[in-house]
Image (cartoon, rainbow, N blue to C red):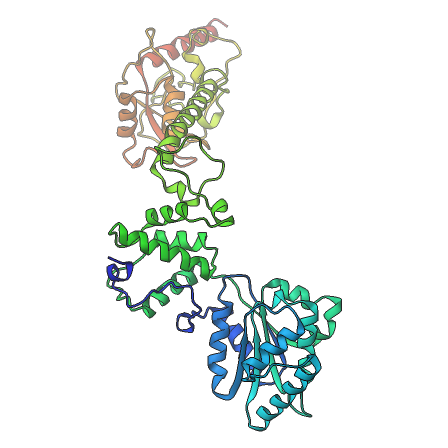
Length: 487
């Protein structure tokens, strides 16, 4: 079964002939077509069409001739022309002259008489020379002299020079400055964008009779065609033709990117193959190449290869971050400021005992448990904890003699949140450790704390007071009291 039968097409949509029915007018193609038609109809004399190979230059010329055919006599020259005499013979033959004898001057006289006859009949003569970049300077000079065939008001012949960018360089040479001055319009063609490439393929399929009940090419396949073809219609046709042939052989519909990969691997596209070379399948690939196709990023094998490396790198980063955080917390922890110190509770009415003072977290260590003459009591400005009716507050950061915390008997303290603090950090700072039991007690003391991961700066948090800590604080307080009594 052929590709046309399998995909239900009336004709080949991606042929190599310049059929104007398949012409797809992008913005640059439409502008070039309008420029050519306008230049001829307005009698400019010379018009140039410049385009890289494969952009549809010849197809656009045929479309231009179809528009002008009803009211012009057209001669289309695409064969190799080596000398000025060859050009005159080809032009006269295209105008219907059978006797092509005589020298260069005699042929020019015959041509002028023929052009005058056509002008009197109301028909202009249009000469189109394709691949004009191959013309010798002497031939181009004769082309310039043909523009001298004119009346007082009109040119007897209109000339379109079409070619590759080298044509523009040839015309701009000092030897052909007079020809360059006579070229009124330079039209140019540009490659398709990816979106224009998709529209171009759909246009050709529609012209060939495809029903579009299902898409013939997947989106990934269209993206590969757009990039590998570089937006050049001839390359697009080549890729689509071979993809349809392979797809019909494999009985695959729609054509996906795997088909396109195989086509690009099989085709000898010269520079395109080097630029967009595909990696071999896993079982055939011996050594990795330095250049990878853009779609190789979608390959599961590449993802599977790099995933363990990325995971290992993340683990290393997390381990280093944890080590730095632990070192900061346990080795280089700064002394707490008054903003984070627990507010002392007001003494009960009628009690002679002085209020409990805030003790830094370091007081929980054995060395800090000894009374120090340099220790000073730090207090926090009066806040919600100092209001009448609230329970007494005491320092909450301590460890038992065996490293375990003792649950409080209902008393609570207050801590004001500093910038950068978290609930876990406050718990660790106040108690030297943080267990699920402590977090549960803090949560019970702060029922308004809906999200433990989000605490506000300046917010007052109530925290439990541990019995072991209360004992460790009472001893320095008693010593201080006795010292005052002794003095």
